[in-house]
Image (cartoon, rainbow, N blue to C red; front, side, top):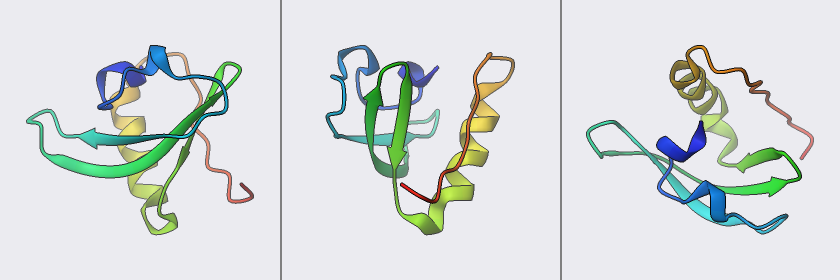
Length: 76
């Protein structure tokens, strides 16, 4: 799912290593900047708290019928 919408190669992410990433529009325009890391089979996105709902809404839009869960965790 994330492989097609982020600027990084998601398959090359190493466990628990933060990696800078961008989310672009389908036209290639800058949308959001954040850090992403992988812990076992889960991916975590660290971003500006003010953008949480916008990023989640966009991920939900791209999710379509994919079988995945997108959640917001304010504790991390």
